[in-house]
Length: 596
Image 1 (cartoon, rainbow, N blue to C red):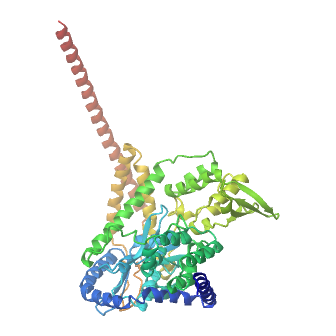
Image 2 (image 1 turned 120 degrees about the vertical axis):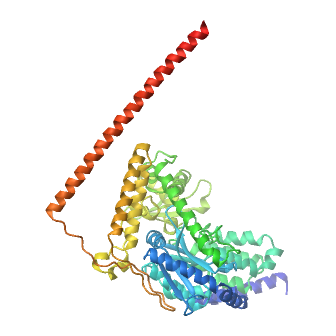
Image 3 (image 1 turned 60 degrees about the vertical axis):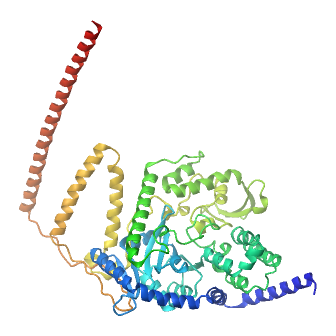
């Protein structure tokens, strides 16, 4: 058979496989992919799991003791254990109050980070993470998986969901793993599940090592096919051409990847929110939160210290980004009122991304191609790049627009194509439906509803998490105002010290005790705060009047002290003026002496 004949024969076999793949149930290609990924790892995973049980069980007790102490200090600190009766070698999950609070604001898109597991680290740490309003990594919970079975992942996801008040995310990104796939499908059936593109690329490099070595151009072409195609038809054509060019039509690994394409190829995922700035550039790796703090040399004994360092570091970075957003003014690049509006609404990083899209409208004119009355369709393309045009449908009555690029659906930031249509229609400000609160300066403002608060007695339905969040927000505002001048700073510090004394006094009067839940073997129960019923002490009119007199007396005493301090300060200033005058006379006399 000639070279051309072999090529045509291989292509026909590929097309038959492709057709068969489309007829299979949706889960079948996924499990087929998992079979290829992990068929060579089973023995290694079993060995690693047994090894971890032997070497880390003692360290697990150290972590458990830490979690018990943290939960005793703050009842909103959640942890759960699955495993041995003494809990020393069981799987452990935890989420502090801040993680649970942040999930209320930024839990729409979640990443399940298994970098430590993938890279065979000594510590089997996994983490649920997301992105905050500055685009920074934010933590939603951690786990130590000493036993990596299917039931362990199901337990872990259920424990995490319980800690997050049962509210499932819009999307979740994980490594392509059969056990994780089962856990997500069981615990988060309504959540859009995406496989890490980074994980897919890593596995492809391993499976096709001989192709990568013999054909150096394959890798960039493969990644271009995945990352730069903008429509499904374009991807399908590019994929088929790639396999044909490198004679890979019969490759079972690539066929299994193609069958699972709807769970990892970007062009199929754009209709769902993943919170990433670029549909084709995100998801390169999933180790960002603990990167630099946990590595292959980290032991279980070191973990807690490194965990706290990572949490503190990212907290500081968030506060700095908050400060920069509130206290610095971005440079505007256009006279557009919409740009000024966005500068006042968005955090700095998100505004810069929006600004880039707005500026691009100057090079992406919108051309009307259809007008059906209520909806007008526009064609938007860059000058000299007509073959990559996008279609925008605009409803002027409802002020709604949709673009074929689906950038807003994917990232929550409006695209240049819709902005170009707004510019053509003289829409001067951004419609409210295109301002995603999670990207704004006020992303954390407003009450957080704790769904499980309804289970508490009526006088404690405003949970500790809610109170913590409210105090934190007020404290941030207080710090921002208090740092504006020395005078305001001094007043703020005095008031803060007085508040500390009052809080200490209130605690000493015996507030309701907070009680943590019990921990069952293999259970996943929530540790929630429960406050004892208590009533405010009754005060008679005489007692209130006495309190007013005492406060008035204290105020008068304070005023008198202020007058004394003022008099002393004036006396010091007068002495300084006298000394200045005397020195001036001496200097003048000295100059006269030198002249003589």
